[in-house]
Length: 400
Image 1 (cartoon, rainbow, N blue to C red):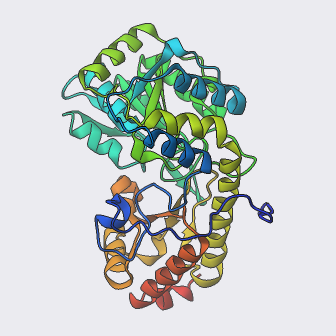
Image 2 (image 1 turned 90 degrees about the vertical axis):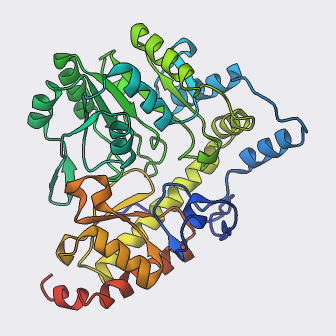
């Protein structure tokens, strides 16, 4: 059932369309699409506190090497204590240039060339790359899709954990937008303990939940200590370009291995603006984030209503986190790669093909809705026009 959240008297601007063309934007300048809704960053202006902090630092005319200040770690600690009752300590934290660079380092120091590493598909496509490009092999625990929702195949997970020593978890899960329950996470921890598997938990989307919904940190849901939590404000506050993250590791042996590898990989250096952005995000921008979550939720409802009325052949997979929607296009009987390319070519709309997230994602498209509503409305109209052009919509509509 839809929740109602008032957006009257908003303090922040989530309606103005900010042109990102010719800014070396990966999303807007890499390709020549009219509406790129693929890569996971937002088309909203950052919180004013972050902008002010960056401008203040930029006003100092020297941009030399930077250290990571204690205040950055404290901002993480205070944020997670306040919002999730998740207590971290600085002695268990390592700075890194990003979640994926961290995971790449962990793969190199916690597994051997040729090893299999377990992931749960459909999942963030870079997991595949970072495993394979480090000369390891992907082992998939495919999620079960039933009645429009996903769940974990624990029997298959148990079997496959016996074959690996490293698993990468995504929570909230990209691309399906699911927050794993405390019971699910505890069960994953028990299976990892049973098979002595180190768990890497990518929790980068943790703040981007529906209003009044909270995610469950793995470390709060399980007492399994051979785990590594990867965190960053980059998605929540739209500051991915500063390339800043931390990892939290209680197990001292694993901590030392990861610390050494991150240093060897030169991933422990701090961007001259990164600490200013992170501290302003966590210490001063909570109200902005609360408003953002309502905007994203309303955008999600817009998509759900539009599909129900105008494109019932496509279904929105139920989700409670991230600004990435997983669209079930199985009734179209067209591969996601073909559908995605057709929409790009004929409508200028770039949605991610589900096949990129694993073979069990081929009936889906991923859509980024972190944009002003006018842009979203345009995208939905283009989506419908593209389906009609394929002569698929009319053929299938009568069957629904």
